Image 1 (cartoon, rainbow, N blue to C red):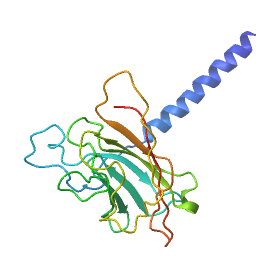
Image 2: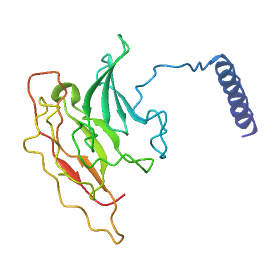
Image 3: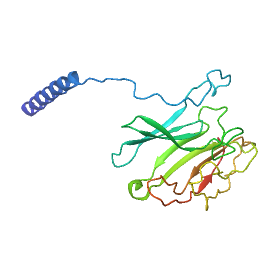
Length: 202
């Protein structure tokens, strides 16, 4: 028993030395990757206005492709080409007063998580081109809660519907919305509709 315990202790000590040697060789280098477009205001006064960029999600296109999808809480969903290092606005969710995006009730003025706060690639994205988003709306703002694709005519919004909000015990100020259906990436000429579900208050 003592010999087997002694052997186990020696084996553990030797494995610990190997780990320490490997850990001593690991170097972590941190450097700037890219500067995102400004969606805030240099002279902003409100909490979210002063944040020059509110990037919240960064996803690599499935299959090791050369593109990144980057969402900004202020509304834009970018496609970033890693080879050319250029941003392209794929969709803009901010359709509030003076903006040309999809949703007239997108809430971006206050609250650190408000706006376009999530972007998710479908597990079968390389084959079906679907992805999903979450965003926060203010139901007190004027306009419809349905997307307005006037500035994004290639986005097919037919069939887009919302579900009733879940009743909550507190007074509701905003509504969290997420898609529950496909949003096409312009990889093919096909365009599909997206469904959005709204549930609860934030």
